[in-house]
Structure formats: C-alpha cells, structure tokens
Image (cartoon, rainbow, N blue to C red; front, side, top):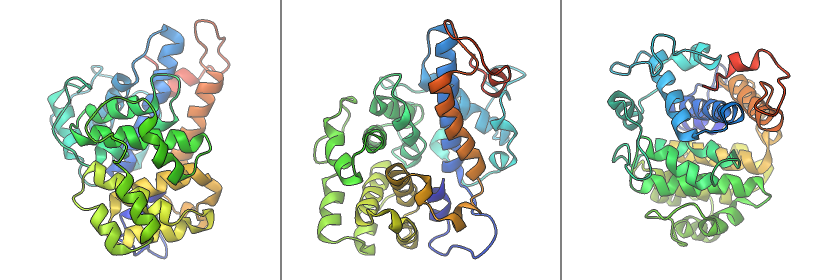
Length: 325
C-alpha cells in the first residue's frame, strides 16, 4: 500500500494530507479479502477455489465504484462484508482497463483460457498477496491464476515470479536471494519463467545500483514484467531496513510508479511494517484497511473464527465480516 501511494506522487511527497491510494492498491485489498473468504469457504464446505472467490471480490470492487457494464455477481445483495463499505474503496482512483474489461465481459479467465491479452502491471501488483497463501496450490501458481483472470502472456509469469518471491522472502530469504531462487520453485511453465528472467535486474543492481537511468530502462513500457524487474532492481539497490524511504523516493522520482509498488511489497515483506516510515504510514489512506486485512488473514488461517466442519466457531460475527459462500 505504501509503495502504491508513494509511486503515485512522482517523487514529490506532499508535506501534509493523506497519501492516496490508486486502483492498484484498491484491488490488492480485495485480493486479500478474497483469500480470507476462500479459506473460510474451504473450512466450511471442504472445497474452495481462491481465484474464483477473488474474481467475485474484484466484481464487488467494480460494483461499488459504479463501473458501467458490471453486474453484481450474486444477484441483488452482492455487497456483503465490511470492505465494500469503506468510502475510499468506492472512489475512482485511476483506471484498471484490463481488469474492468474482463469484469464487464462477465467471465473469469483461467490458466488454460486467459481472461484477456493485456500484459499490463495490474496483473502483477494485485496478485502479489498470493505470496502469503500456502494452503492451496503453490503461491506462484495462485499468482499466475489471479493474473489470468483478466490478463495474459508475460503478465502470468511476472505474477508467478512476484508471488513466489514474496513467499521466499517470508521464509527468510533476502530480496536478491528470493529473485535468484524464484525460478526453481514449481509454479507452472509460462513464457518468461526461465532462470534468467530476473537476471537483468540483479545484474544492474550489482553493477550500477540506484541509477535512475537503469531503473527507467528496466521498468519501461508499463508491463507487469517491467514492473517486476524495476521493483527487484530498486529493492536490491536499497537492501537495508533503514533505506525503505530512500528506495521508494528513488523509484517514484524516476517515474516508475508500478515498480515503486513492487519495491514496497518486496521491502515490506523483507523488513516488516516496523521498517516503514511512521510519518508516511500515519497519513497512508488505506493503512487501517490494509492492517486490518493482514491481521484478519492471519487470524483466519491460524484460528478460523467462524469455525468449520471440525472446528468450533469462536466469533459469531466473523461470517458476517467475510461471507464464505
């Protein structure tokens, strides 16, 4: 969320006022909400398909924003749960054309039949939370599946590699170590997942770290793969926890807004929330929403408050927060 908001400033962070989210940050929130609902569904019904559940989460995002041509997925009462009531998530914050086009078409794409041909950055940025999901398929496979809902081509491999990196960082790898190992974790065989896909970013960070021209070269084009290369380059160029502010300002100042989002995710995974600049976090528009989603995701996976087939419910309100149907 912080990378998304700082990336949108173009490197000129206002001295006061909220740090506003973009559509990428909004969609990432609905990805996490969908993961929670998918886990609940599995606990109660013994069967779940996270990409499908998250597709309906994106549908709710589009409906509450009043996007034309998108019908509520579950009839007249689609706005279940608390996330759809957050005012900031109802506001238009830039376009997400490939996601919107797929939702307007009403049919979710799959790994076998992609939901679109776009290779844009949103196919990656909204899928990065898949790196935190280890209870379904591999995080990389889930990341690619989320990209495939509306994107195609190299966006799938970028999402697979990005989610796998988040997972590997969570296991204790550095950002550079995760980038070197991500190709060797099973996550499917899509174009761009070869062992040298992230090599340009790693080589540039080693030979010419923190150079705006290098970042501009790597992150050119607005594609998911370019955003991943740029984000890796930034995170490896600024590896220390005291450098998070410098990393995000550097990326944002270079105009690499999607790479800034990716760098924020990688550095956040590596160092945790305590490493993020408090003065920025205090003004981050979606800070409370993101923190609540993160805590609720951990609570759901660890404790399943609404219960399940073999687990007794401990919170009578949990099902209302995250309807698992």
